[in-house]
Length: 65
Length: 411
Image (cartoon, rainbow over all chains, first blue to last red; front, side):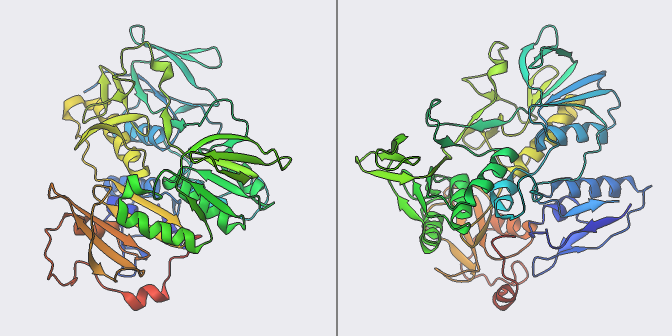
């Protein structure tokens, strides 16, 4: 699956990075950087982390497809 | 492991939907039903007062609050509320006259706005997407607005109304957000509100009535006998947990749904989200915040499946607000007392990054118009205080960066 960031919506809370630190982080300016955009569907830990990251965002700036 | 095969979630907000998803993520494959009083898929409630009110599209077109579709594969009943619970028979009564049996129950029925009086037809409250759409529509006429209550919701509403061109009066008992944030941050927010033209009136509202002088307008009567005239009255004076349907169950303690550190209430019954009173540093209390609701829901769902083997709630509150050009984020206990140490920025200017140390040794980190990862803000809150400490790696000073990346109020 692919993680897609809608940068215009992102407010830089970083709640996603907190639940999925291996997939994304906020840079020094507070902008979200996706370290992993393509998640291996067989990698259950990463899939769960990606789903948690999407769900925790209060402005729905992330989605999976 | 559990033998549960029929779990029902009451509530389809972020707590209810997170709980349902968590059940699936932890291997629950049995029947799953969600009962939601609102007629909508779960949405972001924080976005309603922060950004949805600033959208300018036609009625019914707000998008700021929309969340991705849930993947819990539950049967979802929308527009149906739970009206009663028979614990012994494991059966819910529903507002459509039906019933719903369960062997595991997750209570996430949320809260509703407290009202000044039940019979005040002038009074508007703000909780759901319908309220947001209606208010957005009303603001097009730039009514004179009176906001009663100056907690985070009242102040965000005041900010949105002012941004829409309305003249705004905020009626409150003390400084805005004083109770929730403490005097220092209350001052910061008050000053910003005043700069944006808001009239702050520190006097309790006693009554709201039709204006004797202006047809269609109303008057708020204040404790000192004076009145404020407005076309639109918004009250934001706190909330009431939706627990009436549990009144005869024995689950309520002093009117509260007091859960343990894993969200448990009774065998096979857990609660999460705004409705739940969770154990904290100063006893049980409700923590109606976005991240708290999510963290509680994860814990409660796991506790329903795994009991004591599930992890207890271990969540530090994260609070944020956007109002009057200020984007404020806080990790650690609130309110904060006294003056902060400045890790970046300086008094009376933004961006700023501040830290407080309370008497118990707990720290609170607060950023204002200063973008930084929440993990770093949490780390800042936790670190031991050291006045001479340079920001260094811990917190990068970024004055010019912030200036070139301002946080716009409309997000």
